[in-house]
Length: 316
Ligand SMILES: NC(=O)c1ccc[n+]([C@@H]2O[C@H](COP(=O)([O-])OP(=O)(O)OC[C@H]3O[C@@H](n4cnc5c(N)ncnc54)[C@H](OP(=O)(O)O)[C@@H]3O)[C@@H](O)[C@H]2O)c1
Image (tube, rainbow, N blue to C red; front, side):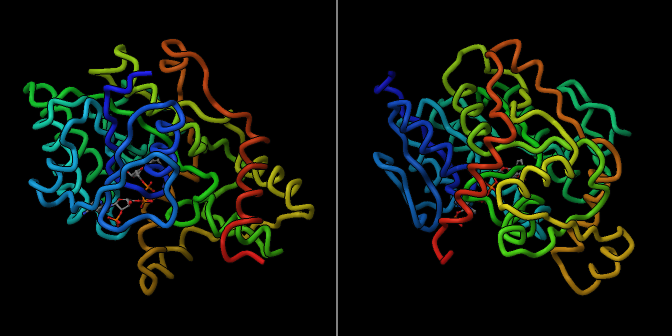
């Protein structure tokens, strides 16, 4: 399958590494790019060190690519200063190479929807600092595509979980790690509302489709994942996997705000608390109509994640 086409994945973090492995598993030529060599790298992936804020280094790393994937990320508390320049580096590299740019985004740009399911045609009306940063970054991508400087497909996913996801996620260490250790799952907001959680292997598969199916270019796509249930229903599945009840320690918003005065991560989470005060549902029907449904059943996704947490390096 397409050995002449080089797929270059910028970012070897939680999604980038899964995407690179998925693409390599499809038999595609894959280069993965980040500043530090990742601890593990799937077989057959050519890793290249580059800082994407250096345009020459980024362009060099993208040389020969037919598809470039934007999976870099900035520290959660420094999005306004650090994230846009990262994406600009990837965007410029894709433009110079003439590659299709497949950009992964989250849903922060939409802002609160009053519980209405999110479809791709929703305006980007974010009210938070990180949401406005993301919306401005989307605008930069779309402007470059409109001006003919790059061919673009955007894939959006919700708060994610999965093997390898520990930090920077609602369903990371504070839920899966705590549950396995017999501690309460930390959660901000109302766990009894429907909330779409994306599953990293599904995100990887979805981005790979955007990079390999000619119909994807020029559009925004919501990437499919497991069916949407309430957070509590998902935690019940986690409980079934770890073999004991998982109690939820739900922090009230006011407490999160107060603690945020001294804890930068809680300060950043506080502004996103609206996601958990109302239903937060991603409509993926556009993708499913075009490319077919591709979400993993929720129970299987939870089981695979718990299994990874049980055997991850450092777990005795
Ligand atoms: N967290 C969620 O629930 C969620 C949900 C949906 C979408 N997303 C989006 O998914 C995307 C990827 O997130 P992630 O969690 O997979 O990221 P991540 O695990 O934080 O990894 C970020 C990657 O970016 C690389 N990077 C950072 N600065 C760089 C630089 N100057 N030059 C080159 N590489 C650089 C890092 O490697 P080095 O440090 O080695 O350079 C790392 O490999 C983000 O846009 C995020 O908003 C996240």
